[in-house]
Every structure is written in C-alpha cells, then in structure tokens.
Length: 107
Image (cartoon, rainbow, N blue to C red):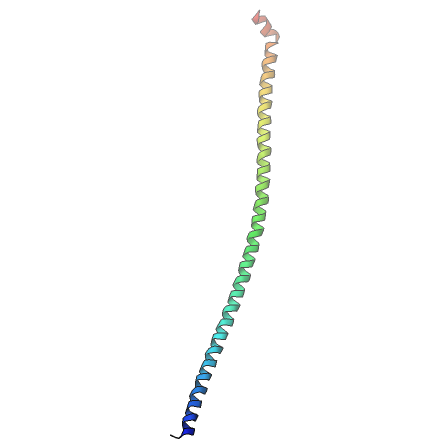
C-alpha cells in the first residue's frame, strides 16, 4: 500500500468516526431536547399544583378563622345562657321567699 493510500484510508476512518460522533451527538441532543421539554412541562404542572395548593390553603385558613370566631361566639352565648339561668333561679328563689304563702308558712 502506498503512502497516499495509507493516508487516504486514515482519512476515511477519521471521516467515518467523525460522522459517527456527529450522529451520536445529534441523537443525544434530540434526546436532551425532548427531556428538557418534558421537564419544562412537569415544572409547569408542579407550579400549577403549587398555586392550587396555595389557594386551597388560603381558603382553609379563612374557614379556620371563621370557625374559631363562631366557636368563640358560641362559648360566649353558652356562658350568657348559663348566667341567665342562674339569674332566673335566684330571682325565683327571691320571689318564693317573698310570696304570701311562704310568709304564712314561716310564721
């Protein structure tokens, strides 16, 4: 084999190796692009989910505040009811002591 043929063979091997490397690089670039697109879609999906969760959390916090306020009002109403019943009982006892039948029986 002549020197020119040897150089030509090396050149063809290098050209084939370069083409193979370029094809591999193109394949990996396309794969990377598809993966990037998939990840971008997933990130957007997660961002939407996060937004929905934040909105749900805001609603729950508002409902919690409303529930706590209503519970406090209920406790106050129950205390007022208990004080009212106690006052009614005391008034009844006072009225019973001053009733004419009680005075007669007491004497």
